[in-house]
Structure formats: structure tokens, C-alpha cells
Image (cartoon, rainbow, N blue to C red; front, side, top):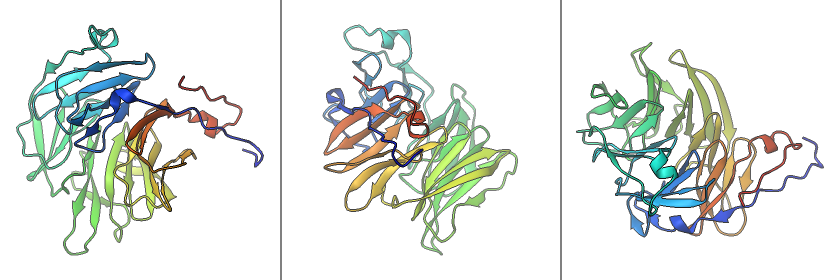
Length: 306
């Protein structure tokens, strides 16, 4: 891209339907064409369709539901909403039906993770692994850090684990092919906010954001981006693209494709999918197009949200 090329950020618009503050401040989150969040201050009860520009509401799905491709699952209470179902895409009275699923009888200490059909849950006993829709579960003995989610993939799972000796939180990756957890990340830095998307795994260290690919139960490629993100609330990963909070004089949203959103106030809690980027400014939820191609090829046009 030439130095003279000018990049104009796509239009960002507020989402008043998701004006509430969630008890888990990692929400609202975007999944596919949907932004999932709260009304007032509380649990997950509503979603906004960015493409169709309409909102739906539903029975409370708890504080920390798992979210993947428009599917919201509250494993603790055994409830789920498929936002891509016909009943949600053509809502009656702006309501979306909740279905019952198998409950997870586990003392969880962090959010569930779901990646495709793979499910993981961090508990005091270790990490439970299962396939969505199956009653079979297995327990991996581990000592996962509380509050942070584990990150699950096809045949593997990664998590952050406190280390009393070193004083830093270390990252571990387990796969069915190796059976023994192996350390990931720099051993002298905290490894936090592990998250997965397909075959990709991302995490935040004290001075970097890391994006890796998991193949054959091992990290085969890794991209390290130096940035001040260690105080971020979370890491958003969609495919091999990540977004996070970049802390400096203020807080901006920074993404691995070169996108940066700044301006007045603090830009916080980014969440992105293939097409959309959602974040908050002074408590207001904002949405814009993610537009990966335009930041790699200036010939591409940005398509505004409105």
C-alpha cells in the first residue's frame, strides 16, 4: 500500500437496542450478523441483526453463555437460542424461541467456549470437553485460571493456568495426539485471554498479541504483534484476524489487519466477525463493518453499515 493511499474508516453507528450493561462486561459480542447483549443491567436477553436491522429478545440465557455462529448456549441452565433459525430471522412480536439442551452439571469457574461442535468448560476439577448435542463428556485434569475461558478446537484445548512459583499465568495446550499438555507463549510473561476460531488460537501476553494455527495438535504457525494490550478485557478472534484494546494515552481498538479505531473517549470491548466489528465508547455500543480486504488492498471499497 502506497504512503499516499488514504484509508477512510467505514461509518460506525450506535446500537440503542443493546444499550444495557451486561454483568459480564465481555458482552455485547458479535457472532455472524448478530450482536448479542443485554437490556438494563443483567444477563443476556436480546440480539440485534446488523444486516436486517431488527432486534429480538428471549428468555435470559445467563451471564456467561457460549456463542458461536449465531448460536447462544447457556449450558448452566440448559437453554439455547439459534439466531439463524427461521423463527428468529422472521420474528413475531420481536421474540425468539428458547430451546432446551443438555445441562452441564459442573462447578464452572469461567465461561464456556464453543467452537463449531467442540465445547469446553473450566472447572475447579479441570477442563470438561464434549461435543455439542452429545451427553458424553471427558475431564482433563488441569488447574485453569478463574474468569478466563478455555479455548477449544477440534481435538485440542488451551487454557491459562496460574503458577505460584513464577508469579505469572502460563498457557497450556493439550491435544488428543500428544495427550500431555505443553506450554505455549513466553514463560516469563502472563498468557491470558486465550480464544479460538476454527483452527486458530489467539492469546495476549504482557507485550504482545499472538495468533497461531493448531495443526496435528501442535502450533504450526505463529504471528506476534507487539502492542500494549495486557490490560485488555478480552481478545476477539475471527479466523486468523484478532482485535483487542490498545492502551496508551487512551484506549483504542486495534486489529491485526491494521485497522485502528480511536477518537474521543475510550474505545473498548471489541468483538468482530468476518464482516462486522462491534465496540463500546463511553458505554455506547457501536457497530461498523470490519472490511479486512480494504486494509490489505486499497482498491477495495468500504461498504458503510447504513
